[in-house]
Image (tube, rainbow, N blue to C red; front, top):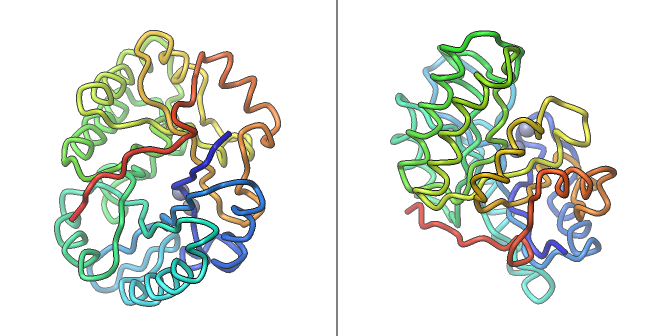
Amino acid sequence: MMLANYHTHTVRCKHAKGTEREYIEAAIKEGFKTLGFSDHTPQPYPKGFTSGIRMDMDQIGDYTDTLVKLKEEYKDQIQILIGYEVEYTLKYFDALLKELRQYPLDYIIQGQHFVKDEVEGIYVGRPNESEEKLKEYVDFTIEGMKTGLFTYLAHPDLFNFAGPDDIYQKHMRRIFEASLDLNIPLEVNFLGFIEGRHYPSKRFFELTKEYNPHIVLGCDAHAPEQLKQAEHVPGMSEFLKECNIKVTNNNIVTIRNCK
Ligand SMILES: [Zn+2]
Ligand SMILES: [Zn+2]
């Protein structure tokens, strides 16, 4: 039984649907006791560059105001946390954190969709045969983990490597090692599973047998009905079993201070 889910989006990211209230009601119905909102963070990108997959910087106030009100309203039924799914970038990370900290903020999770960033880099979810790029993704992800600010690493297996498993695993092992060294949980992402994407990837998560990292399950809900217990996601229980993944502490993780 999952009592917590920390990976939830809102309409502000331009590719999710439903109101915050609908997400909260769905979470309560599904038995969650903690619901963390972690919408795609806005980014302080250069003027003229607008991302199509995240809120704008001037929406932070609306996002946090909405959640602060709902947090209070629902406090007897469910704990609401205010967070973001944040890209680690060299250029924008410090400025972003400075801005986010001006508003209510409980946690951030790391979601590394680009290397090195959205403005100048590549989206890592597209099939890619380059070992060099894979290595760069791993290096970059670990650099982000080392900031110590992220509560966990979302979809660590987002990089869509089109090459051989042994090369893939050689590099991905380093994410497991970092997870253990830095005590940062790795996420099994339900959305990728539901949508039949290349992640969560068997060749990634079978390494859990060897490393036994702390695993967290994340709904990555982009719609209220995607807030589901693992046993309500068809095939998920089998996937977890095959990779020998055990969920500890009812999926409740320790929130890292990011302030
Ligand atoms: Zn998204
Ligand atoms: Zn997400």
